[in-house]
Image (cartoon, rainbow, N blue to C red; front, side):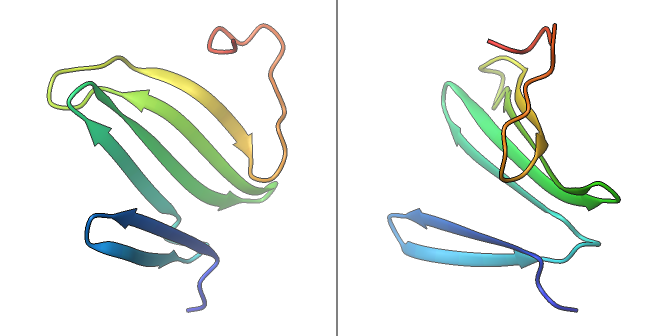
Length: 84
């Protein structure tokens, strides 16, 4: 299957890349001792979507959705309790 999503990661061991298909989607996490950020991308009938959220890591941090919507444009939701 052909890659639809493409991700890169850079750390002390250089850069790594990963691909995801429309069927598999793609999920990433970046964490510290204070918590983590998780990003999940997927395709649905309306297009390519993403959710960006703060999540606990090893018992530290809080849960909060920072953005959920289409990739490539920002569409805030009116009266979204997670909106800031």
